[in-house]
Length: 366
Image 1: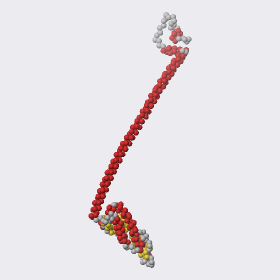
Image 2: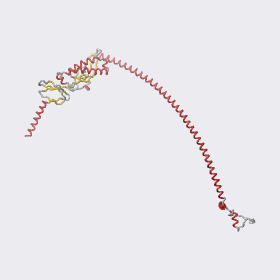
Image 3: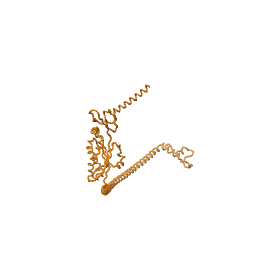
Image 4: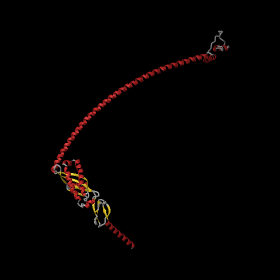
């Protein structure tokens, strides 16, 4: 039972705290600007813009005014144009204002219907001024009327041809933004972007403009063709001059090449002649030296052979030499038969061996 009473007390206390917090706190969403007003005394509107979050505000003592912090879209366009551009300009209806096309009279006194989109936002830290001046419910309409007035004055300075020229149109839109900023500052609003999305003229005049644009395009096309022809002629001239320069350079290079080739041939011929002369001279010198060396060699061989014969003869002239010669002669003797004349008194008898030996090989004294 006590546990149940405890939980009931907790729930009651939580509920009381929730109710008290709801009476003491104010929640400002991320896309909002909070302005607090004191209802008692001489407080009035506090000169402060409150950021998103929870802020103290006692119920019955303070009153909160919430303004849109987001970018606002103001579009002047027909319903069909709005529907066709919904994918680009589709925003919440809270911060989007749509008005019919902006009718203006151009510089050449022609009427035109413009599709224009302008984005704007509240100047930071000036939302409380909107509330204190009582504009929180009417500043949007004030913006619409002011923008219409400024655009009809500024864009009326353009001619139909200027609207067709993208650079001129964008430049006029950029130069109009400062004028809009000065005009909207009193409502504490600053414009961000201005875009002229389309321009429409009456059907008859639109046809004239299209015909004029067609003529201009044809004129530009003729000028472009003429420029192309001039460029081709200039290119052809440059091409011919380049070909002539190339031929001249090739001829010059060929001449230099032939000259260098001739010089090189002369040098090569000189080198080959010198080499041939050197070869012949060297070969002649080598041959002569060879003959001299061969003659010297032959002379040395002949002298060696003469010396050999001389030494041999000297050696053979000795007793040992004679013995050697006798021995060689004896070794080379091959008698098949010997006939001795027995009637010759100088012929020794077979019995006298010493006499036979002396006849054949000589004596020691010999």
